[in-house]
Image (cartoon, rainbow over all chains, first blue to last red):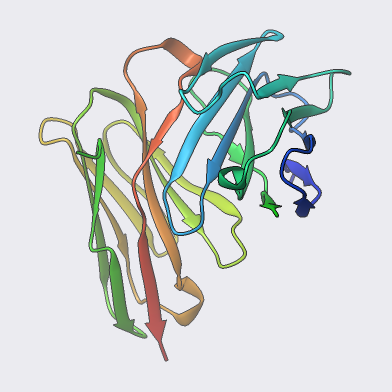
Length: 113
Length: 112
């Protein structure tokens, strides 16, 4: 069964550095999402992406964050200057059409030192 | 106040027991999801429902739209069912791209 793939599984970065988290959504999917989960807390929405543009973003998704779908297969989340509080598990998700379930990747654990 | 509340937060059961996890929400929704998260973090979608009841194997999910409440039942529980079970809702507003709003999850431990 096709699945959403995220790399790396664990990323350790120094505070202030840029980090790019990568996702390969399922190939015929049209809607893409990033969520994050701080350790011990609930999953929170960051951003949704459709038709090559952001369709919705949360208050968390400030100017330090950006998303791209550079080549029609990858979907990336960039954090420009990481902070300690960016340490979390980041999940990518995709779905084929509007009212279908989202499929989640296994997540990238981001640790900021 | 959280828009999605789950109970209980933690649940320990003996193998074979019937398990119920509850979810209440305060927003208008177009769909409700039940998700499973294993240690190590990966999230798997179990059900998406907008009315009535769905069954898959030993899992049953029900929703009452009028009462803004859903339940996830596990029959004949097994230690491999041990995981965090998460309720998430899709708002009725915002169209097809709409985000999911998550509950805090229920940590289930099934002991042999």
